[in-house]
Image 1 (cartoon, rainbow, N blue to C red):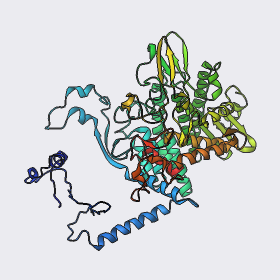
Image 2: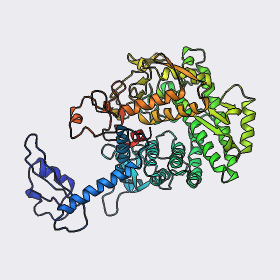
Image 3: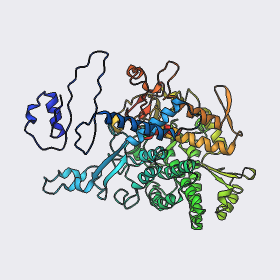
Image 4: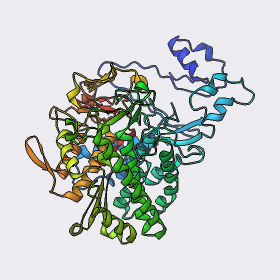
Length: 599
């Protein structure tokens, strides 16, 4: 039986829950409609419902032409995705790639949010409550979104977040680079970005701060373009470069509170990873010098340098920008190494991690020696510059040579003439060598499904004391036990795909420079940086692949995914358990977990 319900969605609830369809009988207007099927299905049997969206009145909508059309669309999709499968790729890996990319395409949705109208109200309608003017986003009167946006999850998170969307564009570039570029540029439009250059963080609080990964996303999109089509889109880089510069200058002026190249920024997307709520007041009115905030800005500087360097090939004027961003990187790197001196006499200095430092008003500097993925972020700030690229930037070439030969104190520039490559990195070779064994220890950061967000050594807890007050956290591999940021997002143990993607990316860059010169022990065997990148990639991908028992780790103990109807279904969860690798958080979220398609 099919009954049309021409009314708002509240009517659906009343009609079905109260089992009363009669009240709708005479309603002829509304904004929603839904088909209602009442079916009797025997145990072990199945019933198929056919649906068709069309603008035409069809006499026989479900005849043979329907079946033929459906089959044809499936064949077209098969052909389309076959073109994206890599040579010698297994059927299981191809399925992960296809479903990840299909999920990215499916997760587009119209998003409408007009802050001015929300505050002032609609014409001819009641005036909104006065409290809105003191509520969230009230100072973002310029914000007016009415666009198709790649959502983190159309069901659970149907809104954008600035750094989520940047990672989305990287994944989407593997299937639709034009849409990826438009999405990245969208945030810099006058209806989004603030006049001072701040990007809106996410719907819940535009004024919060997400990591500045948009420049990195632009570079990754162009790298993927070059792999797919043979050349990078330099016109896109020309378009986005001045927009990124506006946001970069906002970071310099707002998040470097003491003008010393040490950056704060608050929670920076990592929600509850700290012992403090980093977006609110700190103990004793202190200030937190954030290792991750400073490292993100070092990465931003290198990304801007790389974009400018690529654009030098078509316009010499960008060499000035190369020099500027190299200078910024050097200053930030020096400041981060100064932070390191705060805990240089402690055991913590030997593990390669960088730690936040709590600066108290009385002049004390207290390192927060918590081993978490925030302390690994300096690893991301790495760039290899080829001799070919430096042909277009001779002044930068000279500057790099002089710096490498006159500034032994930082070791952030490594130039080996016979390699024809110059390496810029926040981590010195010694720090990199110290970090790798901890990063790849299964007793610390490495899980079966990737790098954890907090070390496993804190299973019994981590305690940080300030003037008699204790602050702490413990390793939680699954769901959060704190209400911080709503309690539905946990960075105290689980594996998160975007930062793991960046770790793999960084290890590959280091491997391209050091080759076999740097190795470390993993499971009692010496391995290279390239081996480490491959090991981590395999662990991340294997979460989605059936194990020896035929079950995909991402689905945990749920039996429904082992049936013939769902055994091929792959879900791209928000994050993953730090011990079992089963998916947690939003269950349909392709979002940034769609980066799996690129591994």
